[in-house]
Image (cartoon, rainbow, N blue to C red; front, side, top):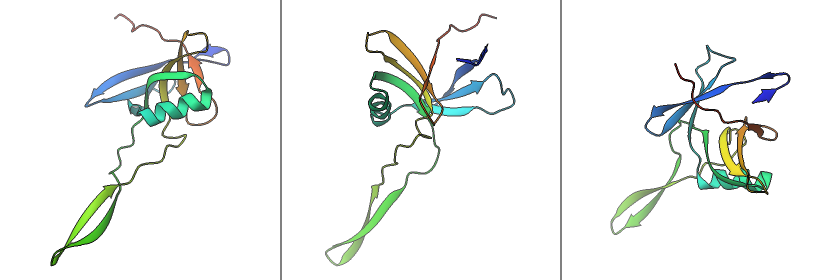
Length: 130
């Protein structure tokens, strides 16, 4: 991604178990942001906000416990507690990540969304050879 006059490089590494780490080369001491595959709802939120087709992407992984709603009900002479998972709202912070789509002319587009404002276009590059 080019910001100002100099290019800015990011690297995505697979952590295993379906998570990825986004490494910012300008902050080598930072732990990076953990990403996961974006859900259909997150892809639709980005698509509708930008009015382009987003096919897939990686969004921020929030490792918090799933919230549930517990309610008691009566079954005969005993009470049973049931739980229903509460859907997490989609916010600009949860949309932080990398996305791939196509513009109105069908050309591939790679975007980085940092949680606020408009996602920035980035150029995909191949892995360096060592």
